[in-house]
Image (cartoon, rainbow, N blue to C red; front, side):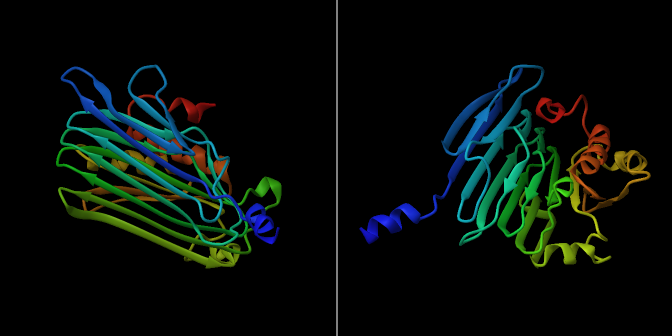
Length: 271
């Protein structure tokens, strides 16, 4: 009987794996690999362009969950990757949640990685890494947005752990790497002028590829009046954005993305 009680009390852990591949057949981009496992699923909605939408059917991320995403484009393939909704990372019970994402794009490919926001709840613990490998001539546009509690709900993050890394390489050479680590009283840390100056929503927009350097001025103009900046370093266009809440952050991020990509945002962003 005690063993049965332990088994019932043991928290469930979500596992998910998504592996997608796209190729250009000389005329159009088409799917050539589709694998999904566990809580991660993908949908390819009909419409102009190729759009892959990831879904986490577990309803959010908790401690001990493990998600792995791989997305590969052959030369000249054109794909936009996004998520069905904002991801939620809840209070940890034991080990941190782990997310690993690996993106590759061949020569002349265009990959726009535009997940919706990640919302962090008090007591969260998240270890996340994004690795991007590009061939020469590939275009990449990415965004990562973090929401530290929902102000409208009165949420304050007094405890949490975040380890977040983004690594961007081209032809095996590292172009840019960004690492963030926050631990303990998250709200107090974000209040520090050198961290977030009181902001509760932060985003990085980053792009590499032909013609991106020429768009720096337009990106800076789009960020006018926002608590944000943009720079060009190591062949990477990088914008950092701070905002008081998720709605304000998305508004500014959308302005930057409008400069860096043709056409509208993914349809799931517009719901």
